Image (cartoon, rainbow, N blue to C red; front, side):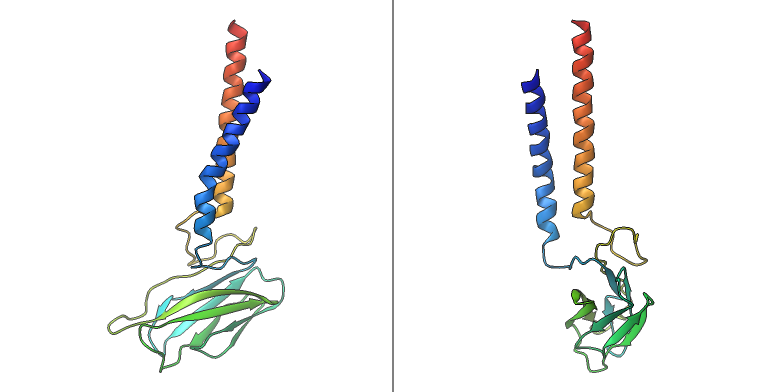
Length: 175
C-alpha cells in the first residue's frame, strides 16, 4: 500500500514539473524583465514629440530614475507617475529601450516610435513582479506568470492526491 502512495506522489510530482517547464522557459524569452518592482511606459507606441507617462511601484527607495536615448532623464518620486516628451527627431519605426533604475536594480521596457499615419495611441505596459502590489492600471495581464502556473499545478496535484486517498479509503472499507 505504501508503494502505491509513493508511486502516486512521484507521478504527481513528475506531472507538475512537466506542466510548469514550458511556462518557466517562456518567462525567460527576453521580451520583458522581471524585477522586484513594477514599472510601465504608456503608450507603448508614440509619435515623435509626443508625451509618455512613466510609472513605477514597489521600489523601496523614494525615487526611481528613468533613462532613454529618446528623452531626457526623469526621476519618479514617492511612487508618483511622471511624463517625458519624446524627441521630435526620433526615428519613425524605431524601438527604444526605456530603463527604470530602483536602487541599482534595472528593468527595461520598449517604446516604439509611430510611423506615418499611426497616431501613437496604443496602450502597452510592463510590470515587474512584486507581491502585495496588485495589478497596476494599464498593465499587460494576458499571460500567466510562473508563480501563478506553479500555484495552479500544485493545487491541482493536491486535489488529485486527495481524491486518490479518499477513493482508496472508500474502496478499503467495502472489502
